[in-house]
Length: 317
Image (cartoon, rainbow, N blue to C red; front, side):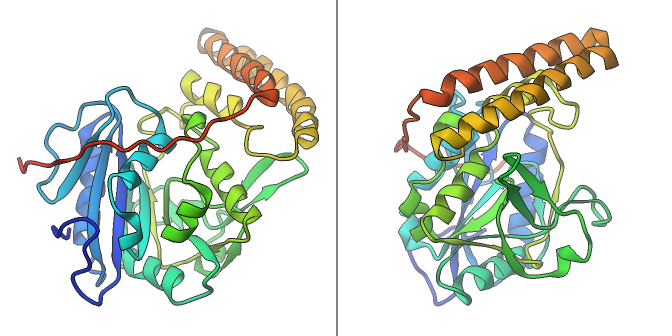
């Protein structure tokens, strides 16, 4: 990692501000930071770890730590990490879940996708695999199905090799143009968890920005280590249901989606109970509670907020 002062250009090489959101165990975050450090890309990098759980006491000395003991959620944490830097002094911003391990060349591919192509390209992301050998793809490009208000994600090895425009990029690992970030104000912090990436993509698209799938930006996604998405934990089910309607406009379209999703959520809750009565009850409660709050949120305003916070240099263990 580059240890230069944040916001200072030190050569003609492209520079990246890299935001890693930490929650839970330290081991995944350390593996993520190690992969950033070992990427041989000729890209200057300033790394900020945003600690949402007050459990990352000793980050590497060449990373900065932003402490958020109140856990404001993923999007708000990214916003605070970006706000701790003069992001306009960097050529691009990289956002990573702490359960991401980037492949060698990731940063160079990100720089080429954002700096050498269409100037209206806001965001670039690449294939995300669920295993080290890349045989199980989780994301190989995606879009948004406006008929159902849901995200589609390709898992095709063929698609994983094609650079192309896409309609959706997950918040797990992506690079973004600082001008585009500033144009839309970053993530909406009111989402807390899930669908903040759908919202960001849609707001960028409404402003005329474009999203690109870049095959060279390959990474491994150790999915759901912090929130239990792989096991359909009540936490995951609540927030993914609560936030499902929030990114979409106009209001009349959101009401259409609310009617459509009401049947889906009820059916899913019944299925969870019948599949496993012991854990299914908690899952059903999370689904129904999340959808009830989604319905209440149809007419509520959602404030945008980016807070400035103090940063500390890490101490090497």
